[in-house]
Amino acid sequence: MSEEESIIENILKFSIADRFRSVKCAMAGVFTMLRYEHNAWIHALATLCVSALGYYVRLDRSEWCWIIVAILTVWAAEALNTAFEFLADVAVPDFHPTVEKAKDVAAGAVLIASIGSAIIGMLILGPHVRLVFEALLR
Image (cartoon, rainbow, N blue to C red; front, side, top):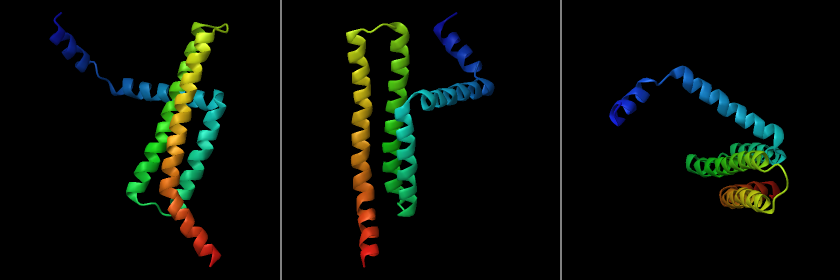
């Protein structure tokens, strides 16, 4: 079979049912992360608090875009970190200093994403929160 025929065959194999199964597996992964990764609970709480505050101060569309990108960046980093930790634990069940370093680097990626997202949150929400406090103090 030629490469072109192989590509066409793969295109024809597309199935809506397979896409639904893929989404189901992805959702199972999200729930696994929430079940086993305690830091994901902190991200969930932060997501709820930031979303509620954004709703309360009536962020505009462009502000919401930045907040959503910040939130999703942290969630994606946490998901990749969790997957990496699971794989590392299977590949090297006993302690290994190089695996520990790799896990630390992956966790560092989440920290970097979280700090960046916090900065975005302060830049976007800070002025709104200041206005709310100023109105309350009058």
